[in-house]
Length: 311
Image (cartoon, rainbow, N blue to C red):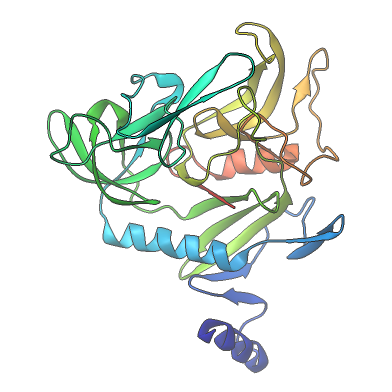
């Protein structure tokens, strides 16, 4: 309430112009201007919005995490390249109608492509999992384990070394925020003490309909890698390519921020789809207008850019 009152007083005094002040200070200064959404807008009979207060709190948490720690890293287990994690201390197996199944920890995080988190002195089983791509701070390490904090998980954890990649970067000034509830995406850049909004766009997140479609995971992630054209397979096939997604920036597991999917036999890129910003429909990824995906692709640097997914 005090921050909002401060905001109103500064507006009346002419000190700031349409600056949003909650925990972190946010100001509009767009550098990508296509398909821009207003702060609030209609979708059917519902009003949707950019959740600036929640976004501000997430940015404030990120600033605090950076100020309290000195060495950062990311957790890695894309396609279980570093080993299928052991069963968590408390786990649940979910079965699907096609006979497939998945195992999750008590917090609902899937075992597949995740990273085991151990409590010191209780190394027989991991206490829980963390998601591939998660932002961490590195507190200590030995020949077998890193001691880490995960940005959006309380506590200190031991992680086998093979799941951790140390990062050279000490600050993360460029952040992409994906909103699953409102189906929108915004990019923000730290300039001094102010977070400047660079874009405000519609997006479509992952549909929670396993085994082929999965919800876009919530969390704080580091941009892992990029693909100019990311091929995707036909559901149920391990070899048949159905099409590609342009300007794909991977942040967690098989989750990418990318442009409008192009199904074969078509090959040319598609700028926009009427389904963007409507309802979740992807397989985990975050669909964008292709020019906005290109903007993110060029702007959010690999191992330096942050993606925050909120509800």
